[in-house]
Structures are given as structure tokens and as C-alpha cells.
Amino acid sequence: MISNFGVILGVILFSIGCTGFMVRRNAIVIFLSLEIMVNGAILSIISFGAEAGVREGMVMGFFIIAVAAAEAVVGLAIILRMYRMKGSIDISLFTNNAA
Image (cartoon, rainbow, N blue to C red; front, side):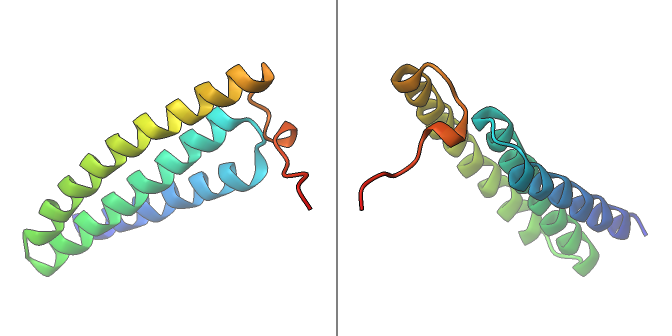
């Protein structure tokens, strides 16, 4: 029963992150939406693993968290570089004009 709650919560988190990613134009909000999506996926993986009675879901969740930490560092570096280039982090200012 607890596992089902974790899966439902993971799906809700993933949906909120996906909506934020699609709707917003601010780079930081998009980045945070991606992090929410990753956390929802991790929660679902751990919940499925607990429901199946195996520990590999928890181990895999731990490794995904480690990769997400590295992704956070790279993402924040990209956002900082965007701000230094244009003075803003609005995504609409960064278009590819090369034809």
C-alpha cells in the first residue's frame, strides 16, 4: 500500500515538473522543473523496487541522485554563462539565427 502511494506521488511530481518545463520561459524555473521531474522518476523507481521486494531499486535511485547532482552543477554553470552573455536568463533571447 505504501508503495502505491510512492508511485502516485512520483507521477504527480513528474507531471508538475513536465508542466513547468513546457509552460515557463525562465531558465531557472525550467531547470528546477527538470529537477522535479528527475525526483519524481527516482521516487517511482524506488517505489516499484520496494513493491517488487528487491533492493536494486534503492541502489539505482542512489546512483541517479549522484548523476542528478552532477547535472545540477552543469546546469547552473550553463545558466550562469547565459546570464553573463545576455544579462538575462529569458530563454526567448537565445535563438539560433544560423540558417
